[in-house]
Length: 124
Image (cartoon, rainbow, N blue to C red; front, side):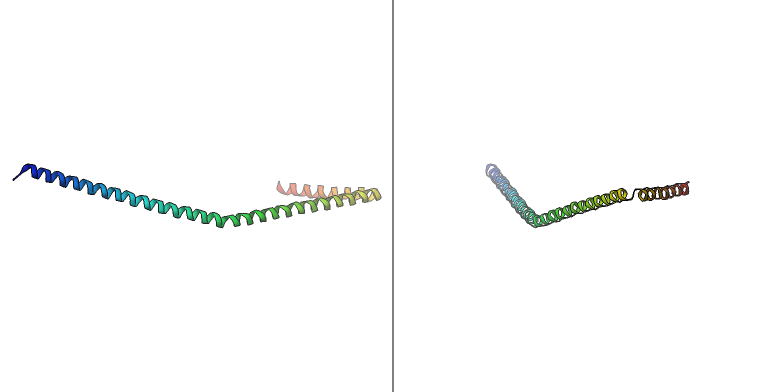
């Protein structure tokens, strides 16, 4: 039996096994890279799709918000105008009927004072 030949056979087998193992590891790494790249591509594609789908929804929501804000501004202006007209009417009435205006104001004050007094008394 030749020890040198057997040793060389073991060395060659060991080297072949190491090469096969290295090739398997490299193949596994390449497979993992392909899987990661594929998953990243799918994720990127899904993100692009979601962005495309969300864009019109965001635009519509912005338009609706702006329309609502404008309607609030318009309603506020109408309320201010109505308040101004009422104020002018009351002022004009008071100028034309000063005695009646004073009596109405006094009666209104008396009613409010009575209500306030009744409400505060019922809480005690």
